[in-house]
Image (cartoon, rainbow, N blue to C red; front, side):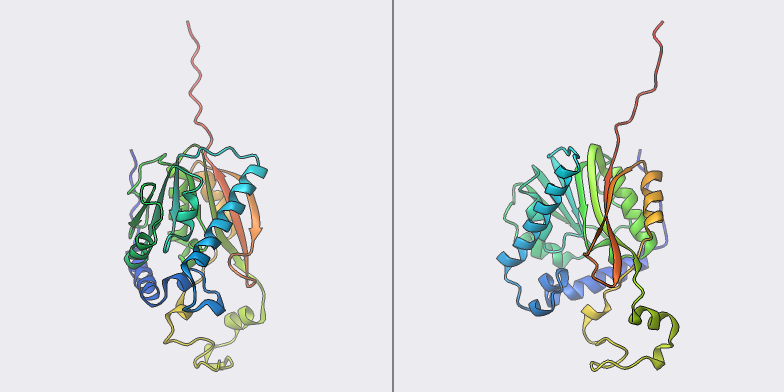
Length: 268
């Protein structure tokens, strides 16, 4: 029986939900893909095509890694408006999209082209107790864990492993550390009052723009590896990626759940 571990992180989740609700009400597609020239200009067909391209590349990579994944059920964690969820519907029989923002989920439902196979839900818990263990053949999360504090992100990674079916696969991305740039060094060693001011005011961000308050967090690679192994998963592959931008060293993890061996008993 699954027993969730209770932690004092609900205030953090409340703050995260408030931020993403603000972003979703302002410009939901741009909040997901904050490409500078696309603020207020994303066309739905173009936006969802980026998800189809991303999942096509992921599935091709899985084949090249010779990882055989069942194609029954999939989970898109941090689904936003369903950019990836819709793409997964081409590859799996049933797909669930999960997000912390009710407004994002409402937008995802509005753009849902696969109503018989795609289901969207809001999750405000620090775990994924809404699903039974072994519920999914495929779990995917990209550019989501990087916005969560370390303990919360690790909680969800443990849940990804729990939710995997036998021979299932979880693919998720998270930055390991921030690269040594002038900006990162200054942030650590120069008092905020002494940093050069940005034209928008303050110290490099416009506080009236909620997009500038999106947090970025790291999970060092050794910590991710230990967490996966402790949860009963196996890291089938780990690769560098560029999802977090040049400022961060980011990795994409391919995590499988090996078949549980039955204890050997000698017949008499």
